[in-house]
Length: 430
Ligand code: EPZ
Image 1 (tube, rainbow, N blue to C red):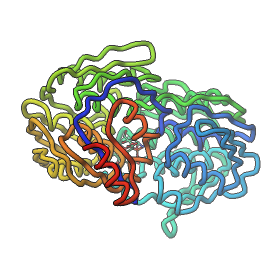
Image 2 (tube, protein in one colour):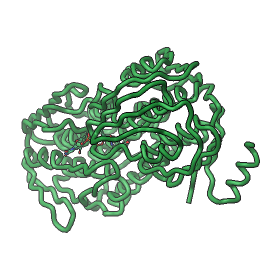
Image 3 (cartoon, rainbow, N blue to C red):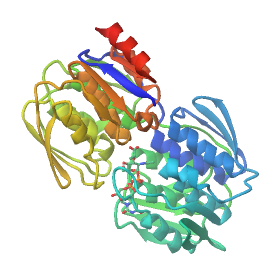
Image 4 (cartoon, protein in one colour):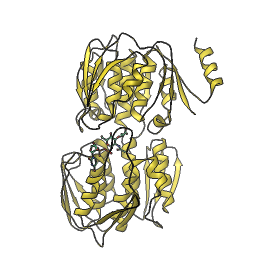
């Protein structure tokens, strides 16, 4: 089973290029099947979640040509099936975006209900509420969501909770519904805007993405487009916190600084220097970080997907910090793993009280979900000694060439498959 092994202590120094945004691509790829023309998508991140989504699309008859690791041609002129296989939804919840795309285009879709997830129960009731409001009959039979409509019509939908997935899924279905749909209390994340821009580049009529009200006028047909995915703000933020935690000095390139404002604000509060350029940010941490408090919120608030990363950085900061997780109910599992490295934090409900320690020490830990895993890599990079991280399959779902990019910044990190490779690493770094 793949693991990461890390010898901590090296400050990260140098430049790193950020890949395309996984969470934008996971919405854009399904949306590409809403036209029969060939769609070219570039700046795709080469990560497991994307590869699984492309497999799920091929399985229903979509022609997928992977021109390169970062480019795909999608042609959905011969979709044979609107029923997505359970194995895909089990691997990635975001397969549920195929619901909105297939319902919008073919007025029928069958997608297994996504199960729970490591970070919370994550219901999709708001997605289904939106489809029903547009006239779809939505039933759940043997664990499969069956959504169908003679014709979808525009509706005025209010999302009880700000939901990225529901906003994107409803927007897709509404893009080809009859008439006008208004979605209130929308998610405003950059990846929501990217999916809207992608659909508009195919001829959709979507206004207001990035605000909390999106207005969609349905169109008959969507056409070809050639579209680059935006940079991944969460991958960028992860590297920014890795620099902060290792007292490094890195230039994070291919980013949209505006998308990183909440992360930048927190790094400044914690004593880092952050310099913004047109499409890059530089993070310098010359001294020990200082404590701060943070609460995760929908965009433009501090992202929940950056909560484990800031939690790890604060575990080494001077003073006590309070981290409040307001989006998911079970996103502090990394705290127990961090305790094995000397981290001291107390979790009470959706709040973690973190008392900074002067140093962490290497240990054997497990990645329990994607962002918790990435945060433990940051802990290993900063810790004294050797850290081995198990279950890195979670990390590989959302970070392209993570170890390679970190090595280019001076990190001593290796992906290993067995004891022999572990010994070779230990001998090399002592
Ligand atoms: C997306 O998940 C992201 N995943 C998550 O990133 C991210 O953490 C999350 O948005 C919040 O930003 C993708 O984009 C593929 P939500 P999503 O719907 O859409 C509740 C990562 O690390 N809710 O915005 O599933 C839900 O339980 C992943 O890349 C309902 O109650 O998140 C949660 O408490 C992890 N009913 C809150 O809304 C619904 O129908 C926000 O969830 C839908 C959501």
